[in-house]
Length: 95
Image 1 (spheres, rainbow, N blue to C red):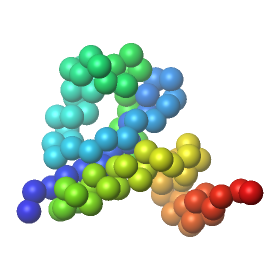
Image 2: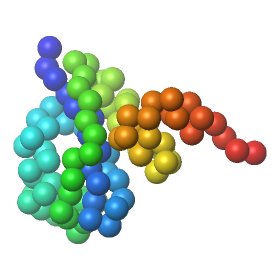
Image 3: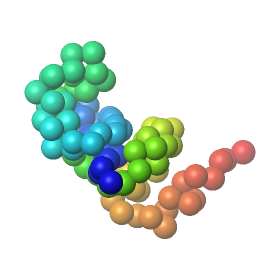
Image 4: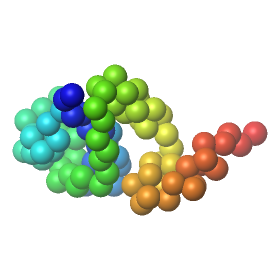
């Protein structure tokens, strides 16, 4: 099965960019060299790869990418830092 990756880049303005690819090294290189001029990251270089995970099912990778994109900054940082216990509490809504 073909590998897919979900990745998070930290941009020079400290924002995060989440993406999905089947060629992680190549994609990061393209982001950092400005290969995608219309991409969110183009004017936010240099970029740092701060998280990635591997998938064997591209559909699951895409679903995970979409889920992470909806997360708060705090929840993304918990994932990046490996604070998996915090993810549950950060998912709770405050009313």
